[in-house]
Image (cartoon, rainbow, N blue to C red; front, side, top):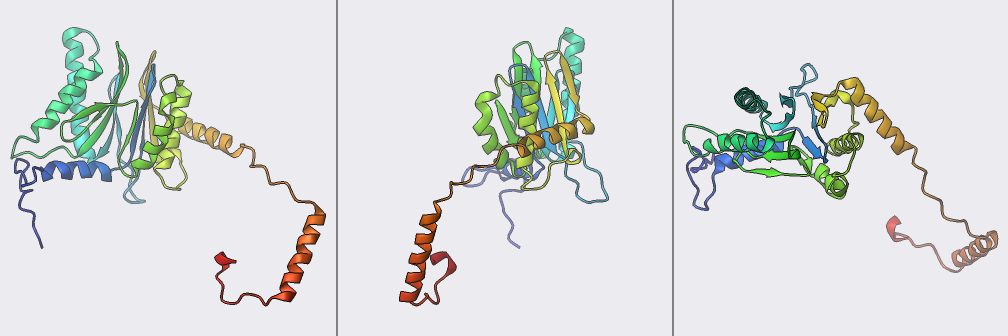
Length: 281
């Protein structure tokens, strides 16, 4: 079996200037279940897909509460996500105890990125194989960040990570201009529709998805399954009640009779084509 000689540890560079251990961790994020985040001026919505490895097992938690104003959704290795969410929770508590004010979202994201980047500098460590969508609300407004295993972080209006996230990104790219002024219900609706896009035809149910909300006057919380199912049913009813497309107007009967006579004459004058494919007729 061929063994790559440049992935024995994270500090070994390949001749092309790549760190394979970091790329492996980023690939783990792509293989994880999908996570989606959207933000407006006043609210942030996080949604994720809860897929079980077996019908006999329960799903693992993918959305974690960090503080009353911050939450995180993960895609990738759940164990690494739990460790990082516990670290974020400790930082938020320490800041609140020291300064008696909530921790700004941007500062927490920078600290998290620094912690992830250190793992790309030590040969005895490995990068965290998890991507995090950090959503929160502070004095400067609502924020949504994506923290990469390499230590990079980016702020988004809406974003999706995980398996089959490209379908959700396509939907979000078509709609993102409306997110800034969207209401809480519209954000949740778009989050559920984007989640449905990642399922590739599978029916969306509250048992396979989790939705959380944080906003002005609304601390971070995860919606219960009954509420999510009611929202899903409402959105699907709206889709079903859309009027059908109008049918093309039928041609006059005389034209049909004339066409039939011409067709009969053509059949009498020429033999039917044999061996012609149905798509060619």
